[in-house]
Length: 271
Ligand code: ATR
Image (tube, rainbow, N blue to C red; front, side):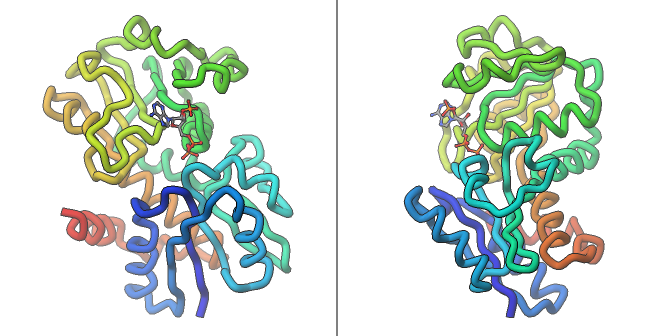
């Protein structure tokens, strides 16, 4: 039996086991998926579980998407450019890190018919998720990305012709009535907190959250209430998970999965 897991800290909120175990059952795959709480000090040893064959693959979540890179044998060049890993696999005893967050985000944008061209995109957060989202946005043609983070030092060096880093208190001056706003922080995971002042929301904006627990965060609920377009985190989460499966199994498992059935399964288990 193949064994997979997601690692992180905290990890309780992760829906990866629900997603993957549903697919394993649906497709009759002899595999199981678990979640493992990993404190900082165990990050190196958990990689050995992959090298030894105890685990066949892993997803990586908060706060290790960047931190894990130094413990891997190889990093896919695209993941290297992104600077974050959310999936780990093993080939001939070589432990390889890759990134499917960017791809999941791209497919989720398509699925929700969100066009970022000619729009002012505002990102809050500068961790691993944020890096994947920025990579995806550039791929799909975003030309103006404004990034904010609680710790400005983490974004200061990101500046280029497309990315504009700002101090967090500049948010109110930068967000426009028709901006695309993307939460890439962990603020809102199983809480009613919002990463931005909710008074900055407007009905002509598109508001995206990368958080999927709760399915609709406070930010998403308030945006929906005032009539803005929304994209909660579940679609991105599902697409990154499907892409992880394709990497682990070396074949297109994702083509065999019915997206709507899978989404319904997750939503109905959480409501
Ligand atoms: P991930 O890899 O999932 O992106 P991460 O690397 O831990 O996780 O990044 C979490 C992001 O959420 C960071 O941008 C973090 O801001 P800092 O760089 O200042 O730490 C942001 N974040 C976490 N808790 C926050 C809070 N209470 N207020 C504002 N931002 C927060």
